[in-house]
Image 1 (tube, rainbow over the protein chains, first blue to last red):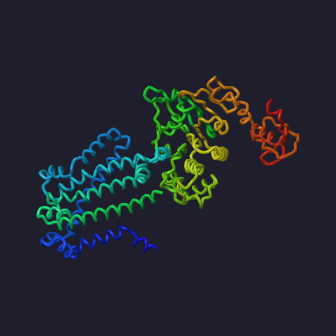
Image 2 (tube, rainbow over the protein chains, first blue to last red; image 1 turned 90 degrees about the vertical axis):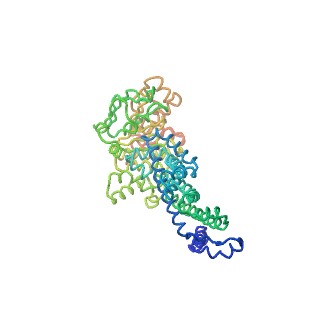
Length: 246
Length: 307
């Protein structure tokens, strides 16, 4: 029963396919050679795919972790009585972060912090903040009024109300925001390659510059699988959280 | 137990509570009765400082409520509300254990107390301990809500329309249970409602409120027999007043001692309303009356109801 469910899970198959292509893209070399006979080499080999993946994973993790901490922190702040007046301002800031194209952020950030990982992380952080803030605010405000009143009336301190009642009840909605943010960040991170960050976008841009279509395909397929796999893992985490929340 | 002294509260220009004073003695069940917006809930919530007062003072057990931290005060006062507010991610047992755990009771003591309360509300402990709130009916949820308010054995219980959202049959059962618990434990209870029948049934004393003031304060019978003004007269209802009077008067006060009658006896502490109901359904004008031990003590007759 357990084994059957595991075999039927898309997470497993997407994960296996992703790992296989990441480690042994060269197995597909005859296929690419058949499709693109005049390209040489036909499989990207300047960096190893696992190294590109780990580098991109690091960038996305750093940016998303920072965006989650800041986003949830701001949402908690504006949903407390003390921060209520800042609600509109935080909403506006997050929206600006989202409207500002990541490519433009890179262009502005590079002269200030140099090439490489740092401007990429800044761009991903700003771009990923909005869904996290919006969902966190919605989640915290969605805690039923009666539950909040009961918690206060029974003598839970503000900190106890936040950690024992508000955050656990808002967790599934907050996690949904992080899921959207991370999935977007994985796709967006590829443009970091234009300013020298190592990502699975590096073969894509190299392929575009050198007119080598197989490189573009290889990078794009891996990025897509990376994003899909992450989304599937988050959806499992979300289901588990909702069950835990009763 | 509670002394409210010249307390006021305004929102903007609107004065919700207007120099209100009220003393509630230990063991009383005092009902704040009025239509919505009369300031009854605000008054209740100022007692446990969910709402700060603008002026005046409130003492609980002789101590000014502002002298202790709000959380410490609230853990000493039970609080039950209409929306119940059970924590949906906690089991019934964890919900009831909220305040005892805040007070850092030992876990064995918490467990015993939860079991005791579930039994008090006739919820079988092994069945109900591990359930989540969404698995309970409305009436069961409200029982758990009141059990949670009573968990740390507070001297004082504040209840804000706790039974307003449940169906009439469940409400009737909950009222009976509350009356029983009040008699059994001797807790001081302040109970907010807009339902006159509920007030007459539960209260030892009723404070009728209008526009932030108490317009009449007295025992249920007092208020029915001597309404202070037209507002109270309208509120308690001119229509059906006689039946309400019967519902608060006791058989004990009209008993014909020493006489006997046939049939199933009614209880000495039942209301005249219940006696009338029994006479109507049994097509008789005399009923035997028994005391709490089941001994026949006399008779109540139809004519006695109206004299």
